[in-house]
Amino acid sequence: MKRIITLTVQDRSGVLNRVTGLLQRRQFNISSISVGATEIEGVSKMTLVVEVEDEQRLEQVTKQLNKQIDVLKVSDITDKAIVARELALIKVTSGSQLRSEINGLIDPFRAIIVDVCKDSITVQVTGKPDKIDALIDLLRPFGIKEVARTGLTAFLRGHQPQVNELSAYSLTK
Image (cartoon, rainbow, N blue to C red; front, top):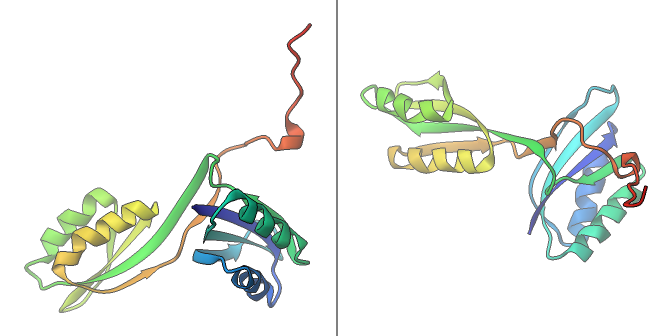
């Protein structure tokens, strides 16, 4: 099963290498990884999409990641309300006669053309991975020269209470 795990980490040299090394030693396949700065200086956020066989292995890797010295917080956000996006650049073979057809095809996906050459165009699209997959499938008959994808980046939607923020409820008054 695919799981989306976010890590808040110190922005230091070698952190990414230690995290990916830990996952590699435990034979987890990383489908995608994205890393970037956060609103706090010196702190970065990693979003990992990993393939996990069962809950026990997921718990094991989460505990191991929490033990890493530069890791501040680990969260499995797969089953929560999240905002998740990916960016893709797709270079498509295109003569001048096909450009309007391709433009009409990408418009419902809110994709844009970011580069035009004599024999190709480059399309930029953002959204959920299945949306990007669907656009790539539609563009494939035109001849895809190159695809570059960022990998998924995600965080929780709105304010979701943490376990320690939940108040206890009683059925008796």
